[in-house]
Image (tube, rainbow, N blue to C red; front, side, top):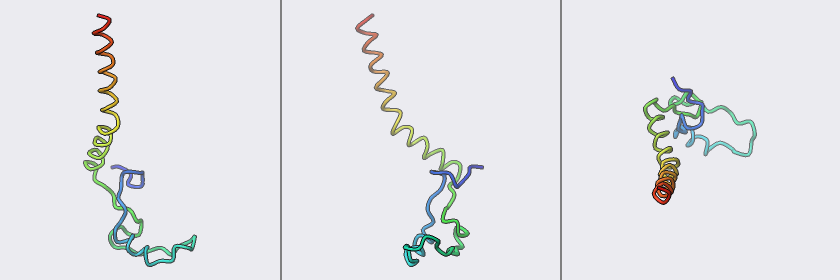
Length: 82
């Protein structure tokens, strides 16, 4: 069971966000907002499958182009040396 409090394992609760807009944001200690959707945490946990899907999508976006670039450089070097 993933920890929904970790970054990326949750989404913000839209019901709490709407309620937060009405609360005075200048106070440091804000009153706790009662919410039936997220039980007042402000976070909606994602399923394990959704966490894995998002992680893979991010890895494809960030790491895969770099991996292909390294392979292209190695292939070019091998063709010129060999």
